[in-house]
Image 1: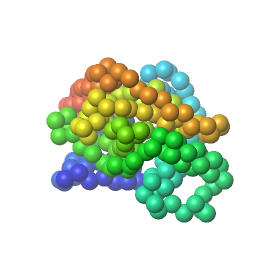
Image 2: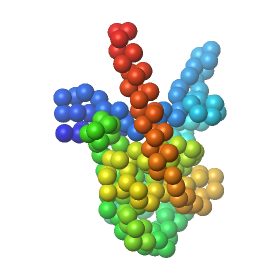
Image 3: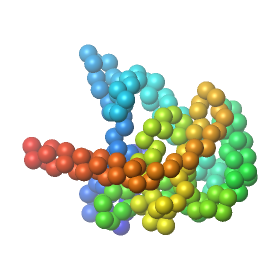
Length: 208
């Protein structure tokens, strides 16, 4: 049975063993310290971000995700929203209306038994009548393709179906929907990262 610690987004088997997540496996960002100053480095581009700025952006993204999940679940208290979130909610509501979005799963933790990893897609839905998966991004979406391919393999009916990034930038709150095309390449990239992750984990265990 899959268990999840929502505060840290850590997945566990019933016996307490941890399960790697999709974002852990891709490993897009990693923390570094230079002369006692903390930064985050993008593994693929080399882009460096101050740790405080990185955490602020992460917290903002978490707030947007939480708001949209509660809204879709019918549990959102709109009177409690910060004013900066209101335009995003209004645009999201319009996006749903224009694309005839029918929600199927909202942030449901899933597990792939064959490849032994877990993840939580933002939204599985019917979009204009087509089965689709949607991931909200408030920052970089460089690795959205492999991430959504991995999510599709957690929910097999999605394989070969439509994958979308809903980009929600903070400074300019105009929502932009991006369709991801090449499932095969994205899935192969994720599998390569999974093999790397498991290899490095086994080498670290050998040193213990």
